[in-house]
Length: 517
Image (tube, rainbow, N blue to C red; front, side):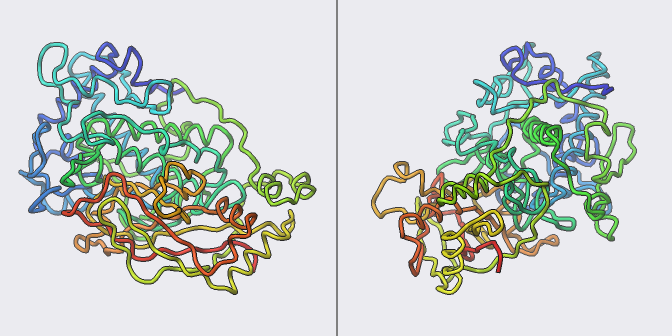
């Protein structure tokens, strides 16, 4: 039986009447009193996730507004930095297990501080369930400037601007959603799971570049951008960038909820990867290990197989709600395409990666810079590949399912991590996009953009990749006889607009079919 229970931060109205939050504040305060070169300090724990300590301008830690008053010295020896700092796993199938271990380590530090101050020995980290009824706003304990005793509140952060850039901190639902919970495959794709899977694509140690996993893409990334937000000049909040995000105390409550969503997904019978490369982590192939400092001044090295079930850790959650049965997407599509008899014969399948290969259907020409409130490009389609898609849609069956179609934003680089990109297909010129939700391919958050665009400290500078399944839109175009065309128009509407001082560039916009050859 678990020793610790993580509870809802919105208990008792999300104020300091909720003693979980009051003791969290006192624990954060104790960790913030330690110097940067102390591995048990708040600052070093933030650097474990990622850091811009020596950067000569924003978001360098020396250019962040206070509170918190973020130090840049004294730094630990380079050997310590190389071992502990800049570990966070993003755009990777290690995203979930690495962050689970990170939360356990932070929780242990806070609990030790709570116990030392006379608090409960079973204190556990609360979670912010922004999907809860009337709980999409940040708990009030994080916006109060003082604690109940009148001292400064360490949970209050100045650089937290919200989705509208006005300091009103909430998670907009939609586009933030929990639709990913209908996935049934950790890595890969099948009829219920779009590529690259619930948990992310197969990678080695990956500190930020490439393709986001489905849970990481939404809600994780979009919550980061919404909470951190940005100002009109492009300066963004702490939560918007992995190199400064863990300086904000709300970071850990957000990740606690992501961890809880993983636990709910597993509880529903969904399985994590059984690939030895995932179970044993990147250190098994000679890459960096996952290592955390403990309050006892010792180190804890862990691997994903130790993190893949709540039964293997010493905590649980106060509620792990049951998931509603997922809709059979193949049956739904067959009905939509007119193959009613075939739809009735569709049977539930085991969640197994189909291993279906993708084939390029079309791409735009050249990089697409995004400035201001909109950008647009044309994706030219290859007639031969388009004919394959049309043939699959014209005569679909259970044995020969229709193609799936994905739109990719490749090698996205820039500096505006707080921006989200709303991507539309064939949006009529001059029309209000809100009037055409059927043409919205999806929304992607650019959390991690700056980090993935760097070419120093071992980064390749390849940028981020995003994929949006546009199968439903293509089905609709086909049924309207509008898919037999040479090109598709793609409109990208950034929110907030990209300022003149900022930069976002999409290396290529491409469309792929996934199906039988």
